[in-house]
Image 1: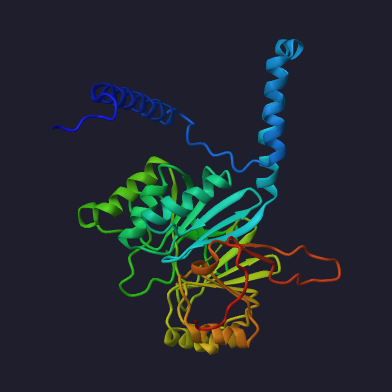
Image 2: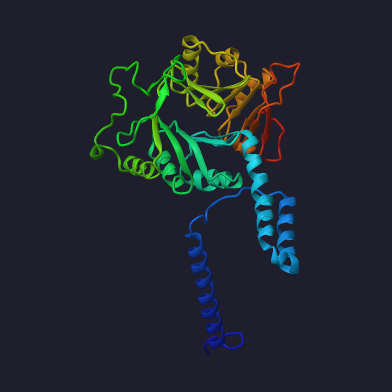
Length: 380
């Protein structure tokens, strides 16, 4: 005897078909509105007071006859309630956020100017970078820096650019089809700029703005060129020994290695260390004059004791899933708090408020996104 529906099979089939048509219609409507101009515009996170005031004004205009006649006043108040606090928050915010590892991703928010150092691969962009930028109400990057030239990073930028526009893009790899930004040469006055990468040419180094013909470049590089050109993004090349301003801070690439960067903002100093093993770190300590830094941000490799003794960081942040136990013990022996993205999630830094009696306000405030803030220096 064939199996039948619990009550009546044709009725079940008809209901399922009707539900399928309804779900398809909802999906089509969502797709239509998602493609409208401004559909992806992010406002940022609203405070509870803003939400209550917003719906309160809507109810007032809807229920009150006097307010319905003056609906335009309600519309202005709604804009003020939503937009004004968000704008004031952005212009006053100073925050650096370490988001991910491999490669290390850093979002710089400095009084209304926003920048991004690396974006990671497609999964990192989709799962971490874009959600964070939307949560912060960021729809445009004033500048972006890529310290990686691999295909995964290029694919990440291709994923990010259609959703977040970029004003200036700085890269270690040349792109011939885009204009080269004039950046100050090392030690030069900020107003007297030279073309980035035009000085101190090393053997085998391409001329400024030069690149292999398009037919010899990977397709993904050509796709990135086209995406940047479509946004009219200004392009610049970065070279060791170069210094350039970013918002109210100054970034300089160490002349001894393009894997060692310095960031200064007021009395705060950062040392950025990208993918250097211990032998390379020891060599840099001997070659370069490493000054003490308030904060060390690095990509999670083992740290050489000579580098820690030379830099003397007050706080260390690693963009890494795990850390070497010897490195943890070394930093613990120096009483240096250490955070890493694999344990703490996104790590945010805000500068300490300066005091009249304190010319050096310290390394600032570190806030991991996860609840567990205990610094476990055990190798387990």
